[in-house]
Length: 254
Image (cartoon, rainbow, N blue to C red):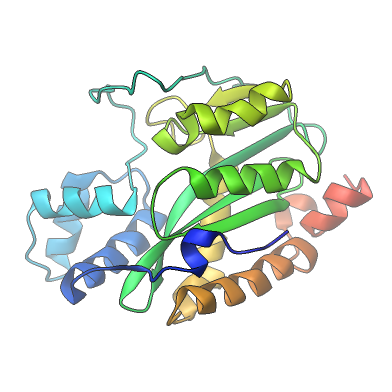
């Protein structure tokens, strides 16, 4: 279930100059704390840390990292003609059981002198991580691999993502449509629409990524594999009455 994707296993992480990588690490830490910060505030924050950077550079690094602030804003970007957008279906919906709602997202992970991307599929009710993958690109392949892997275990009634091109591509949507799963997508800039994945990333970053120094993608995969096994089977969640995600997901607790 936790096999590394081809993109992470066979290829080196994306390389970048040391100073840009340092800035990306700073941006990642601050964005994890304040995902509502856009490029203006992140630029101001970096300058307060003694980093003399302009907004244009911050915007470029945010694009490389796949970061987008979660404050409400107009959608000024052109939508790809072959990509499909779906409405958000989960406002005021009570989540009462496992496999009712799953969701997925992507985050940046530092590896040696470069970086890779991590995606995961999580069950909203149990917080159980059904699958995860690493990749050295933001192409949709590793997201599709994670989805297909999760669907070998079960399938949800509703699958929720953001409106990123990885999730609006016909190749990602096809297995969901074929299985009759309802598709939900976050409203543009809505921080709380995918809150459980945001909480997962915060846990992964502070409990695993920020205290480790991955030298290679294989090192990152091996360490993350151990972490997700711990997260699912041993980590007690306050929101789950101090049960583990596995106990709730498979044991019918709560």
